[in-house]
Image 1 (spheres, rainbow, N blue to C red):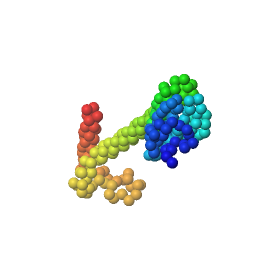
Image 2: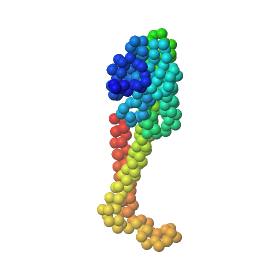
Image 3: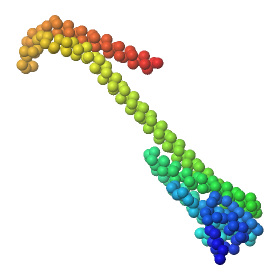
Image 4: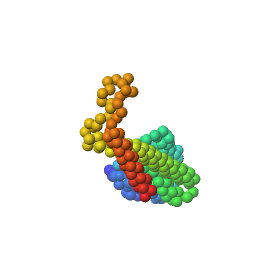
Length: 260
């Protein structure tokens, strides 16, 4: 007994159809022979599927439709289109609920094979429409396939725009945080620059200069403490002046770098 191929064995289709089909579904397309029309379409794809399951629709010369999985009548092809529309609607709900880059990537990743499949399905139905120009059902199916293809494209573009905006927003927030950290670091540098000369002078002199406060035992004795020695006062004043000059020098360099 000869092999019937991947078409349903009970279908009394022209032998040319079975001869032109191999063991795999192949691309989505339309075939016509002796006023018989065969549509080879794909089931709605999953994101990580490497192979596509086939869905066959046979139109006899008298206008009767049959399908390999969804029964007979033109409503079978309508159900096939509905499956794509429902899948797109689910991804649209995910897109509306998305809050992170991972959520948007999931939507884009899932829509990618759907966009390809709907585009090829629309082309196959357009091809079938040209083969059977008098069939009004094919006109409606072709137009419906175009609407589904466009819906998938619009949703994908919307998800990509939202993802780009989210990335830009995060980048802006990181830039603002970096600027605040840079300002805080600059203030610490100014503070360190101001006290650096005084700390250096204290290290050079061993902090052994008499300042009049070394004999105080409690706060009540501060008013009766002797006046600090001139060397100590001079060291503090010199440290403050040098610290002021160093701070001004650093501030001027930062301002010049910002202008450049």
